[in-house]
Length: 244
Image 1 (cartoon, rainbow, N blue to C red):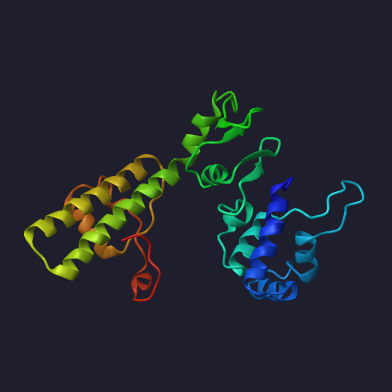
Image 2 (cartoon, rainbow, N blue to C red):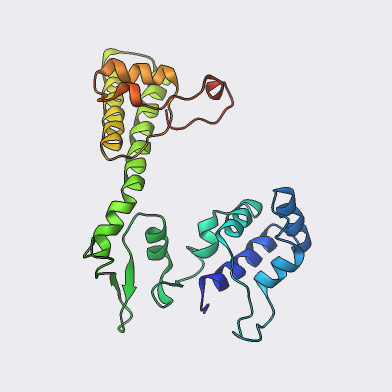
């Protein structure tokens, strides 16, 4: 059982490196080609196996956030999965005090889908409690406020997907009044999510101008001129676009 998240990352880096058939030297070369030469062969060796520190006794060196992100890219794996390996580890050590928590619970906390949890002496996990500061008497309340943008972006993605599905149906089976009405409803739903984001002080993603005009035509947008617009070049074919 790993004692720290850096130990978990070390194990997962090695596992995914071997999955890809890469040596440490090849992984170091790949990291360098991605603009991170500091992740050298020696650095990767120290992350995976390390040398025992004369003062702390630790064998592996900790992994920075920058390194976690570049290793995730280099190894073609979600960076969060390197620290919280859902499906391959039952429990991982997380704060406070490196509590061993179910990996999927830890994942949902880290990804902003559920509040922080703690493990009690009987081995059961429960929602964490207690004050964070004089402003927040409960950690869950503070967490919900901080994670609100994630909830709104999830809602935005769902609304966008429903609009895309409705438009795809028209392209596949043809247009009629009922399907046009379905698209109109989905456009209003999307506009309402954008309204919620703006009311909450959450910046929505940029949309292409034609979609913004369609949203304006619904009359549902509360601040139509404040919706970010994608640059014209970004709407060319083969360019990545945010939800439409």
